[in-house]
Image (cartoon, rainbow, N blue to C red; front, side, top):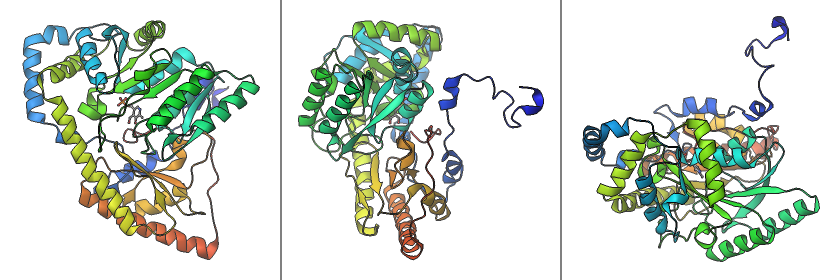
Length: 432
Ligand SMILES: Cc1ncc(COP(=O)(O)O)c(C=O)c1O
């Protein structure tokens, strides 16, 4: 385009690749700038409470490690990841019933990079990817950036609904549309907080075997359960069909950016090549820090103390909701993880309400960001991972007041839903 016709805000608008059009800035990101003010109670971000870590001990550990191994830590390394770290990762996965070899693991820059690499190696523009409705916003952003056609499959309080999966696969089969993979967060789901039951796990795997569908099991919260022993991973029962994604973001620290993918041999080889092209080499600094932490620190006890901390916050959230939310609101009851999924009464719109909630000094994530089909207006995600219990209570009190006002408005003027948009909200830094 001649210079005078180019967009005033973006002079390069005519030369981006088509895939960049799927990269839509979050409509709610602007709200987060306000939401991070101290007077606002943020039930929006999914930030782990890293302050609960023994920071002084970790500081000493890293300092000592640099003094001892600095020349290795500060050097380039491989794209598959440190072999000793991969051995420690096998020990972590064994807690969820996974028997794996260190060689089958690819270390990634958080589970997010694993999602990106997997989508990169499997998805051409227009390919079908199945995802739960609702789904993790960061995964939807990745799928959109590779121009996938996301087809949602509903979940309920027991996780992904097997019958709905079967029907969707049957329909796609009739339409001769090939499904590249099913993306699922079976345990303590983000954003819904629900967990796939043991019976359904078997059923989902059986259905995927029948239709020959690859499963991406994304499991960053699996060890953060509040009741009973950890769930058995899907990957524990199907090593050929399931690619498992793990992360230390919630069990150690998100700032280290260490996650991993456990994949069948051939896929693993492609992932390593894709990782080489993306990052050349991992941060050995972070890998050594995680490896040392897992070798010398009581990490199992630390996870227990995280479980306790988040359980108290979950309790504060559920008790406050039960005591304060107006009639007609419903919500999930998570057994672990970070999130409660709340459904507003008929005729209310969580996205339209968000600015009014911020004005009342409480923030949440509207449900629309967790669907790629523009639905989700009646829902919101509430996080209990970061604020103290008393702040959670205060946040819910403020939220309940806003919902009450919305109900009054609806009863006076009828519904006034904002028009839906087709794009995907990509996450801001604190919307994980
Ligand atoms: C379901 C899910 N998958 C992946 C990620 C990305 O995690 P990581 O920090 O390991 O990149 C998150 C982060 O919140 C998540 O909730």
